[in-house]
Length: 358
Image (cartoon, rainbow, N blue to C red):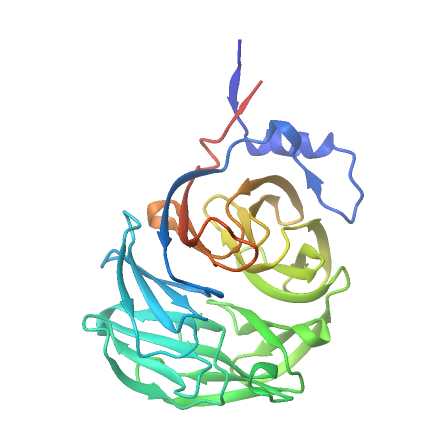
């Protein structure tokens, strides 16, 4: 006979207290961890090679956008059914996608010679471009201020320096920039209520803290646990940063005020995206090795590694759609993947309903 009970926060804390773990390396929940992600569907795309990059979402229009970086296209899917609806051309090397609902407009960062593109989201025709330093890649969004931050420059365009450009996404006007004496700058996390932006300076193994008003670096925090820090997510309420490294795969939790390292965990290898699920207090690490690492935040200073959920080889970028309680991952056709390119999606099982079977 199986007994089922809800894993409450109190039970989680009791579980944590009973696990033999060092103060530095985070604890693992073990076999009694509740189910957290439920595989719900997959759409396969044929004739693709290389890497996919990041997603964009149009919730009201029921569309999911994916940058097919090495294929030189933008792929459009039905958000709810997952069906592939359209392949959009007119981009060279797309990376990140920002959708502006009231303008029905797409901004696609493009490291190709044509620069960052502006597309009409009905016709999918290119209507303009935003002239930035070459190499536009990762983005960050400041919703209250109406600002879009774009990483440009660096080694992919044979530049020794990198630039963080600040633009008005509605007009395409560049408002300012921050320069880095580094040729590899990766993902960022942007405070929505505060004045800080955090960005991984990967070749220096540091996380830079930017004052958004002054457009200046106010701190540089070393990532001591591992090398090649790339993805990052932010829990602004609890002032915690979730940094993922690639050498080796590691999830590092930092205090977003002081830069102090709180804990760290082994994480999936070849990760290009880490997602913080504020509703369920979870962190999802999409690993190209074929698993999604799931970690539970018990409080600001205590965390559990819940599970490595099977995905697919090459599934290393992701997006969470809270309104649908769904996590999508992009399955790049490289990375030793023999199952084909496409997308997968998982139902997020709410923490309040997650159960443990004994």
